[in-house]
Image (cartoon, rainbow, N blue to C red; front, side, top):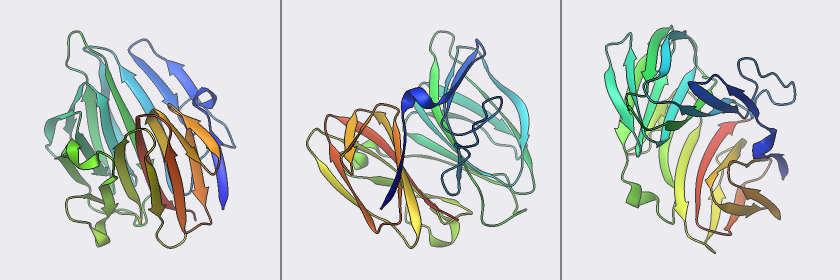
Length: 237
């Protein structure tokens, strides 16, 4: 088993006034040659957007982009004609492929929006762009992992598809629960603690910390207090 630990305070941080953003991996003005990616997981940003503010129209190409609201909502608009709000409990997936433009705004007049955005390097280049959004039943992730994203060619029923052999899961676990997660093939798994505390391989991982694990067939996770976790399983090469 190989592991890497990224503590919350080691993340890159920018404060633009309208946006506070924590970068697990190099992004924008934050560059750390030792923090470029975990396998095919290229970006994991923890963004807080102020009321009535947001990201203006910008372009992406050849990237799988997953957005997961934690608090509040974002209004999405893109060049494919999609115009929707994304709320807590929902997940948004965009395959940028040959190229698309989009914008994201917090329409609330008083409340911040906090969301996670992941970028995963695709296994196919220049695909036709696609957009999917789904509301998941939060009860189905209580004391178990709920798979929200799977490979487009191996879709698990109810999940959203991307063009990579990656699997993303979310779960809410009560104190003292135990989890064993089995990996597919030669993938690794990146475990990000949204809230709470876990132990993996005798390492304590707390709120907004993360641990990456690879060269192993399964990972055992001990829940030390009520915890919300994100698991991102990706190819390592």
